[in-house]
Amino acid sequence: MNRQSHFGRALAFHLQAHAMTQKDLAARAGVRQSTIARMIAGNRRPDVASLEAICSSPAWNDVRTELALLIEHLRDEITRSGRFLREIDLRAIPDGRRGHKPDELLERACELICSEATAHKEFRSFVIHLASMVHDLKRRGRSSPEGDAAA
Image (cartoon, rainbow, N blue to C red; front, side, top):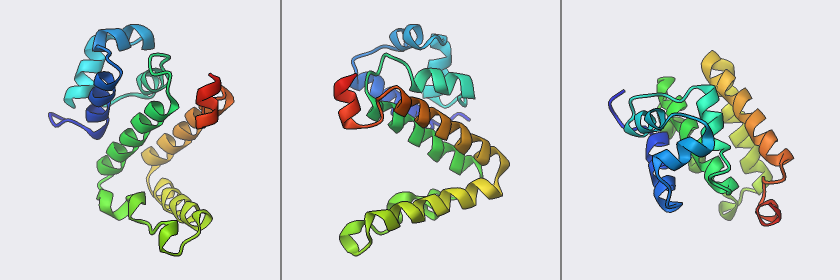
């Protein structure tokens, strides 16, 4: 790899924002510090177990951070599939301020994700696992700002 990934940059940012060291996160997520260092440097792609451990670590205590890390990993997977982010970037879909209703925006975003997941086996596996992780966050009561306050 040798090039810092979107996930690596996001992980480094959130460690700094939470005043945490790689060693702190490693201890709380149950992964090796060297694994975290290699992910940040772009020398290691997160496997499913380490991605789940890092993104759902109690160290964050913040669903926004967990989801931000998952989104950045998704961006990396899109890039690895040989597609350009601008082709799939959900932010490029017109938002509700330009005459599209929020439900239409969500529907178009889901269509894009389903299309990519159908075309690429590895991406499909990641989307299925991502949905499972989001479901687990929701089940724990941490999938919304209201859930954050209650946790």
